[in-house]
Image 1 (spheres, one colour):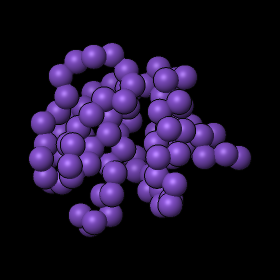
Image 2 (cartoon, helix red, strand yellow):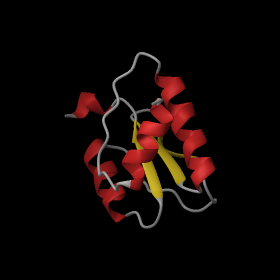
Image 3 (cartoon, rainbow, N blue to C red):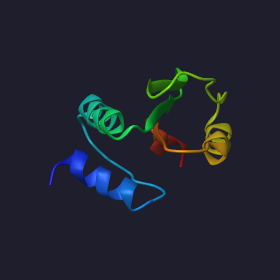
Length: 93
């Protein structure tokens, strides 16, 4: 089972949090992006430098969050089929 299939199974099972540790970060992001495009899910990415960015899904306002706690609060308020990648969030734990 590839990472795309594994993450798809987690999303369909409504798993709340999936932690992926990889040296190939961009490849993981690309796989999740392809999965979200294929399944019609919105994909948002948050990191310390660029904050929230939309990688797939319909245009619309992005949550505003410049710190990790505010980012988590924004994620909690999201509605619908939205997947959020919190890049390098392990530094905040």
